[in-house]
Length: 212
Image (tube, rainbow, N blue to C red; front, side, top):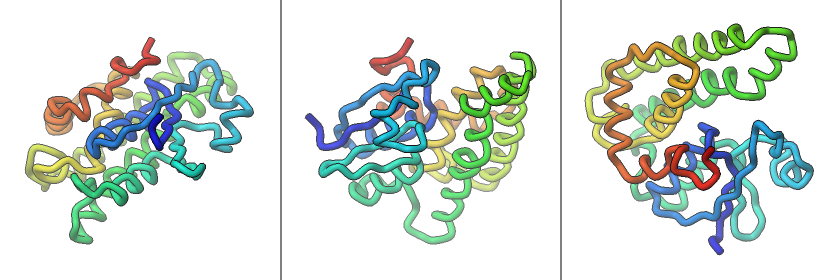
């Protein structure tokens, strides 16, 4: 058994980020699925691991638990620094973090399952719920596209994969799922470059053991 245990779900974009980071770092990890649409993340046994009832959660050897995908990715970057997920210099490092947080803090949370279910509970029909998610994604990715407009290279910030790319690729999966207009040629080119790498290709939702 691996020293680490990743609790996730194949369709969770936050879990997808951590799978990519683990692959890039060549770190082994046992994976445990919690079906979000069936509410398995709210089971008492899982809430004992992550009281937020969210995925992913990473259990470490010795019993410590990490939550929140960006924090997990940065932890992995610190324990296995090669290849680095953040630039060494403070200014580009801050820009990568800002891009990653634009997705992880501003786009993804307000179009995830928990929020969409609350909109349904308030009486919105499925078209309105889907429209909410689609608009949130399109407006957010418009901003992300502008954030990297002055940054040439194969990936978001140059010719090395960073935390920004790890956040972007899963979010584009959600963009397609909710019917967003894919009007960002640069973002799509970055996605294609990332998916040519085994670390990303092996982490895609449809290749996971719990895929449906």
